[in-house]
Image (cartoon, rainbow, N blue to C red):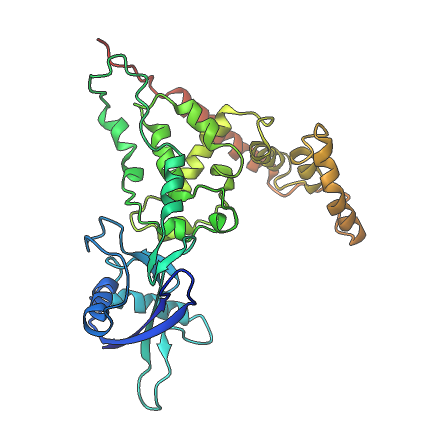
Length: 357
């Protein structure tokens, strides 16, 4: 079948973007990388893109395929067109086809672009320096200071090792980083790839810096509290690492160790849970005062709420009363049951003994 490939190209970092169209006769089972290879070999040798293993192992060929980051060696033409058709069926126009003369079927269109959140070097090749720098920032290596005998092998049980498998599947392709909304608006945020690797260190029984890591990963918005929880990293990850889930696990560890005076991010989560337990939903009159104003301890924070409060009063949107939701007691019971279960699980974790001489 004939397919049009619209490739977003940029000859140099300073040059303007342009879209170049190539037409190929392809099979549904051809991967996007197969098609790009044919374009380069048969039509335009100047097209630049990364590739290596062709087998979903190295992560080199990550790019934006029809609007979302993916591996070109993993996605094939047939599945992509089916995905686009499913999206188009719920819209007025069909973005996956190009108009054809009357009586002829529309030609399917595939749009290929470089990954986001990283500057373009050329065409589909991006500069991944910030990606690697942010990975380095979380210190993604096991700290072995706890070893009593440095030269001896540090053993793990099969269960301890199995806990690392999901994060260990990360091939550092950059897809999650490319689609990260938090990274797009906050250049300090290290990114979902780095925090997924960070959780691997947190739960590794061999690591001796767990507490220091958690303190560092919870500082400001460069760590876990910078995540906006959009779940896009989970959606695009080709290896099912689920970076958003790993970020959530780090948050749980931090919340277990810190009280509401640690920082505003921790206070936000704890206050939210307490207010839901009290009323089934959030009492907005208390939320800002407790979180931003730290229950009248933070005068500067309280003053920062004044403009918003005045606007709400002026527009008659300030809630003068609060009515608990139906089923509040049931909600409270569920939350307390989960909290108790988490506490029991935490207390039942085995103590990891260091190797003896």
